[in-house]
Amino acid sequence: MGRPQKEIVLDGSPVRLFAYWLRDLRGTAGLTLDQLARRTEYGRTTVSDAMRGEKLPTRPVTLAIVGVCGGDARRWAEYWAQVRRAMDPDCPDGPAGIVAPPWDGTAPVHAEHCPAGCRRAEPHGWYTESVFTRLRLDTPAPEALERRTVVSTCDGLARIPVGVSVPRRAGDTSPGHGLEISVVHGGRLADGGPQYESYFERFLVLPAPLTAGMRHEYELRLRIPPAQPMAPHFVHVPLTRSERFRLRVGFDRARPPRAVWRLAGVPPAVIYQQNPGTPAQYPDEQGLVEVEFRAMKVGYGYGLCWLDAGSGG
Image (tube, rainbow, N blue to C red; front, side):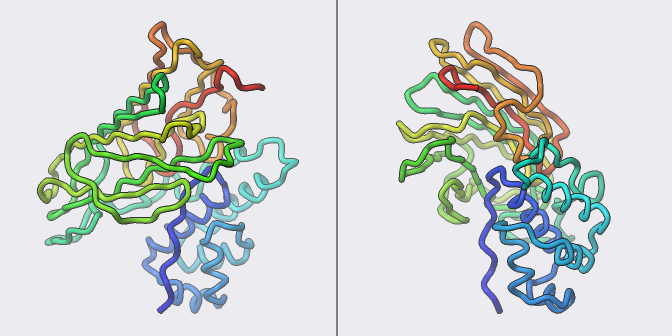
């Protein structure tokens, strides 16, 4: 039996996002890499590389995987072509040209309900009812307080993963890159999950196991270490059902941003653009900008990006 694939961390790359959803399609079909290789008649290395996120797989390999996994071949072919065009440095639209992916408007990507009589305690079987994040940029180091309410869809839910992506700011080549995560209330943190250069995951151990239908609220404090520059955006990218997200950003009134843009349902790659094409917003007299989103789509970004006072462009 081969080793499990390394977790994919979304960093704005269209190729990595493509691999993430191709891997998700395989997971939905319940196929191992060995089974996928046999049924597609491609080598195990070929199908594994297609979902590694390092390069875009060929169109024939992609469609073979999609066909075996029961995906919509026509829509996946269109999605593949969009990603391929976005990789071309001469493409005028770039990542913004990537539109609705193959799963959009079809079957849900992640199951939210467990089988009858489920008693598992692994981190599964819940959805996010609400997220309220208060980000402060007027402090010596950026700090966010994030309050989440989750709803269990199974009995015996005892812990859930807490993952945060902290991408590097453009031009940041410092050797250290970190994030401090602590619990304000609602449980305790335990080590576990993938750890990469820009992705940090822990497990939130709940005070007591939840039964199906129970709500649970917890709050996290996220701190970027002093002197570590922050990428100029804060975005919620739901990878499972997420019903409501409210974001309040407090900017330094002595150095307000040149402009702020609202991001609503954009592909992760568009998050890294300095002007996503929406009307600019500006902080109020307290230095605050607040936005709210509902009925969010899985795999799309929601939040704010900004152009710092000293930035060019």
